[in-house]
Length: 440
Image 1 (cartoon, rainbow, N blue to C red):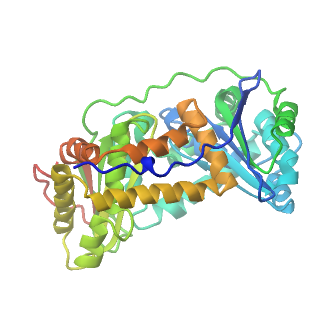
Image 2 (cartoon, rainbow, N blue to C red):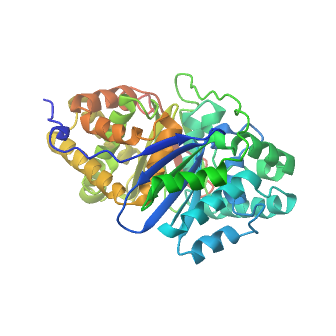
Image 3 (spheres, rainbow, N blue to C red):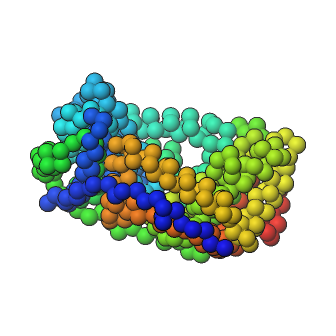
């Protein structure tokens, strides 16, 4: 039985968005949103780990660090100081899909925020000193967050098992060997290829006058050369996974664990959205099926985790757990497999669909209240989908997904699809469980 869509009752008013494209190709989205006297700026560059080549991984993330090391008119680390002294906050992140930089400031500090972004886009200080110190900073981050943390490697490992194409399969943070091999010439080439107006989107949201904002953007960014188009990119995947099973010895892990990953369609498809909703039903929050079964019910796991990796190309969904002492990983995995099989056979209940739709609407309303969230949604939507409003369409698409689409998505990609299974073995043992046909 279908569930009546809440779209018939609730519909968020579209945001007011002005769009412009400068002569150098910079895409601009402006959202005037009077109220709190703040403004947020988001700059998204169309470069992530997927753009890296073998032997030169980690460059996208390295540049996230490099971008705060000074430019023609801004000294090393001065970007942070100027933003904070103006009463603002800022940061940057890297993913497989993009690198972004963002700041929230008092509305009257909009010129400062735009000028800082334009200065480093046009004249970043790419030199040996900055490469050396930021290379070491990234390597230390890798040691602290990945290499010297229990289970710190598992998500990079499962990604390499799920995907066959190097563009999709390698780690965002890169390898120590590749970071050590990087040269200034390598970085200058990378910056020239990807850090240009024509390869980026600038979004501004907050208590601003759109015309005044556009004049400032023209003044600061208009003279930056457009840059040449980056190399074409193939992220397509062959059928199946790269590696069905691996037993991984983690000397820092106190308990056994496992993580399973499935390849699913790209983020813009209804199939992807249906599987993403299935993930919410299975593992998202205290009321999810697996939390109720494994955490609250049997009290069988120390930690349950799951997430959907959204990409413009082939994507993935992951589910895993750290069982408590006395519970075997195979036993816990069978509970997960049973819930997947049930969802594939019978689909979600009406109450589950209503809960998810309420969560989507609640998340959307909360995001709309944040100038930073609005700016980031516009920038990401334009970069990924060619439309700064596509995030609004995605909300409506999510709300319109039917229970049968969820059931079909689970049956096709989770119950019926090929998956990769990573067993984490504590200590130095290299013995993993045997893999039955149904696990493969």
